[in-house]
Length: 132
Image (cartoon, rainbow, N blue to C red; front, side, top):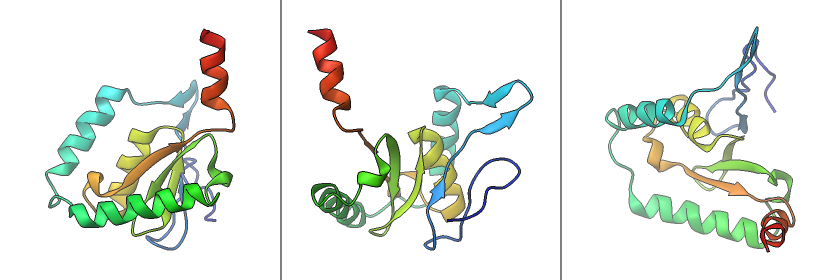
């Protein structure tokens, strides 16, 4: 895995290693953009790239489902993972920030990435039981 930079983000060459997203530390804590800010940036970025091919996205979705079914994503429980060209190219707590960071790093349309949350064991079951 790539080394952390001074800003806290882990970066790698496209296709070589997983990029682990971290928010940028500040003197008062962590700088966390709002959902509206991230959505605005993603929308603006979409205009700089051609729309993705549906077949490419579908292939990555099938690969993701196969990995999830076969237990290949257990190490990523509790995280969002980003898939591109049948490989995990990044992880992070915030799916919008992860998508933005990777789309910029990989120079591609944000919707070309398949970003999914991998729940911890029993995560949704325990939430359901606590509401009952």
